[in-house]
Image (cartoon, rainbow, N blue to C red; front, side, top):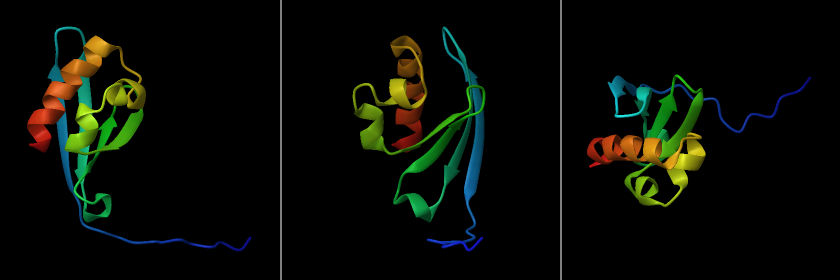
Length: 88
């Protein structure tokens, strides 16, 4: 089978592993910083196997974290508070 590559790059990244508990949920995250994401970070929710590329503007978008991480609004708000601190 012939492959058509759009890109195949290797890049050094900075990865941060964070685990914290909110009032309702435990959060286990891997946060990857790379030049590939144009100032945004790749946030991986290790427990729920979900991920999203997130910038400060995405954190404030209504319903974005709820959808991206399949979380209830109360849980997404705990995650939102952490990501606000991280991205500012």
